[in-house]
Image (cartoon, rainbow, N blue to C red; front, side):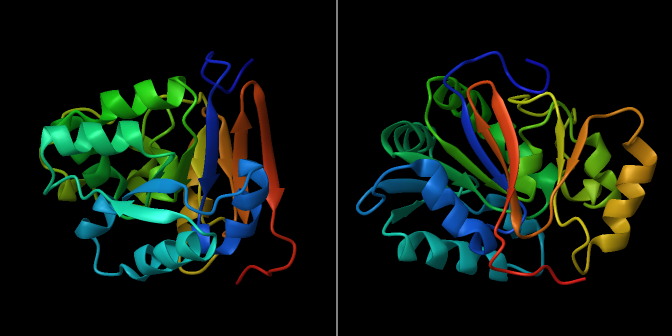
Length: 220
């Protein structure tokens, strides 16, 4: 099916702002989350000044009853990375600088383990940058994120778990104009999927859907 990796077990929850769609994840997971563990990767945020969304995501997971097991890629050993990605029930990657995040995933080899785990059916949760790295290539993100913060990244080729390109923060401050530029620049060439802070792209096997948390309103 166009728009998705061919693996039937793939389960992705791709968001702009996890705290604003946590209730949708609970439905997506379809089971009691209490006591389940999530590998929590905040690495992309290290290249940014603002990191409040990491704290908010952590709190959202804890409120859902999940045990948060942090994995900061720049500080972790290869063994720790492998153990946490393989052993926990879910994998979450936060927002931040997409290019820095991709650089560290590739540098540590976490990208290969992450792809393996997703293809084996482990549910993945992405927020902003963590959603965009699931696309084939993140060059389109250069209008949103500073590429110079990832000086060792040799290629913008991403994890390619889907064939489409998530565009987070659609209509939301302070990214509204930036997202409009991305849509104008790449809309005719790439399969862009813009989502607001209160929407998520759900990938479940061969099914892809955009869902909205209708209890909240997006900031214009």
